[in-house]
Length: 412
Image (cartoon, rainbow, N blue to C red; front, side, top):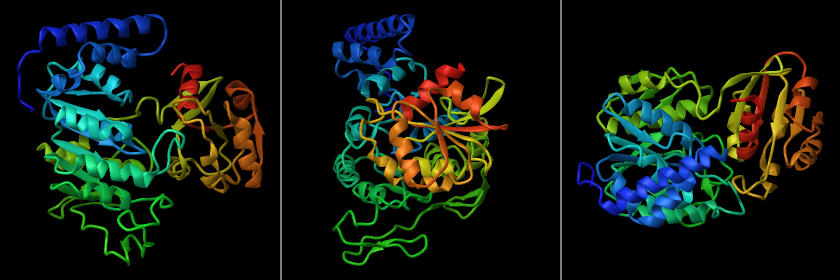
């Protein structure tokens, strides 16, 4: 339980030390931050280490298909108003990466932890969270992740009876189904732009009715719950009806939704909405997302979009035509090797933009764009794309490993 300050056992201390040493070796070898390998080594030596490292923390877990890294960062900034925070800010969100992050939080009061969707229930069992934020569920990494309805069911089973306060998106039927097994849920009207994974009722399989912003199943009566927090334009309405302005440096409606959920989470920990939202303004970029960088005397804005829902949100925040757009798609292990999701993205929204295509699966993307009747150029690398792009800011949209490749190339 949070508040337990029992010191770590000699075995746990050894595991932490060994994990940090393994991470340092990995960094020295140029193989990234070392958080994953460090966590794996530590958990091999003490399989219960994750729970031990969290025992003195008030923990909030954040899970979703899209937006969990950004929301984790926003919550962490908000809670720092009330005490020190430890967080897996770089997005290593499986048990090994989470363990590495918590190993550096011996003096923290709060643990703000992003969790991969497949591991949410297990991590929740290990760390006894005070709060769990559930944002959205949509198709992603089709060769690895369960079908969305199955994943919602696993969450529902895993969180049943949890003592945590669950802060959940009332506009996503899959999230509502997953959260409804929990006895203490705070509903947030955060919106749902992408609806193509929630047309059938997760409760009975019937067809969902979606009049306006509402939704319900005409067969079994499963319906949208009444939210106590509401995103309304540039404000979030709290349970008392007070409207608090959202001022962010991060672009787009999706980040306003992330901020609204983060304000509801912060309130669970006693941080007032005004204080929480003011602190969120300090966040300019998240692990490279939204950064504007200089490359070959050009400005590139780096945007991450890794599945159809994410691409839809990203298209809504880029500058209008004739702003040039670079699209980069890989299909490595961290992306999922199945690129059939490209056909679910409405690329016609890019009509009028000069488009440049690169990445391991640039030809897969080129076929998709050709079918959409868009003009584009296939490029061998970022340097070629930037040289061909017309003047002005270049919007650069990439899925996960392609995004990391681009960051390395521009020195970000």
